[in-house]
Length: 150
Image (cartoon, rainbow, N blue to C red):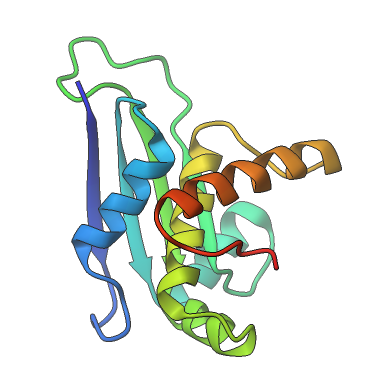
């Protein structure tokens, strides 16, 4: 059993990396974990709605992760259902410009970041943040991207 990565795009494709690239970045973050996840690319309205509903913050955010917390699926062909990663395309583009980062590198970072959240990584306290950021750097380096925290 391997990874199954579904893609849902709710915005025009301009400026969004290819489905193959998005899936490859997610798979790199999964690091051999079997399971199914969905990458959903949205606009600011949907991001703000989800962020408000689930995080009590009314503004859009670059990435949200929704881990599926149920018991493992019995007899599922693709492994466990991991969850959903929701990325706000317009915000990613603005952040990349503002941070003077290549857009593709910023997309890769946010996909990796979101998938790591599904796998149980977090950055709520400094030690956890340090571990998660180190893992992000490792994964992104294997994909040919620079340290996103520099």
